[in-house]
Image (cartoon, rainbow, N blue to C red; front, side, top):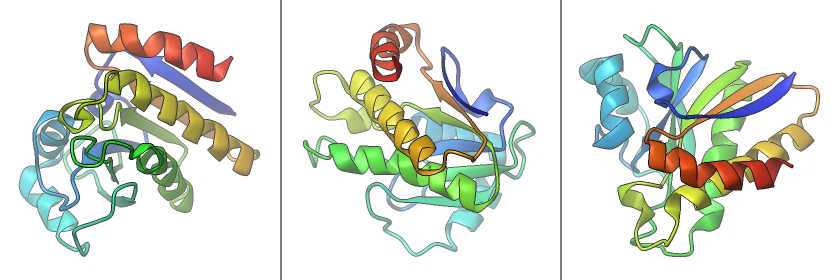
Length: 178
């Protein structure tokens, strides 16, 4: 079964095989959902696991670590979203962050994943509607993934944390998947 849902919730709280961290290129603890995930997993253990990767990573890439202290997930997939303040037309990199996270999930033979709205906060830069753009790219990546791997069971949870984010993401999500 292949399914994608939009939730008004934190991706860090979902019962899934892998939680996605909206990571920076250096895989360091940051603010927002990145900071939440580091705290829940155990900052020191997660930082040590991230340090095994050669950084800086490129925008759109995704890597995996154990979830350590997170009871609701086995792994953290660190997806590097673009910073639209520096690269204002990085839509392909945003798509790639979602799609590559799904590829990492499949490579590990995992079947459920929760995403935040990548590059919709501080990395949204000067985009007029970073939440809507992130929801759009998440849906496009999901559609390509299920077309590329039609027999692979996957459950995707796209999480809009704030009510205002949910309200902005809902129409985009509905129009992309209709």
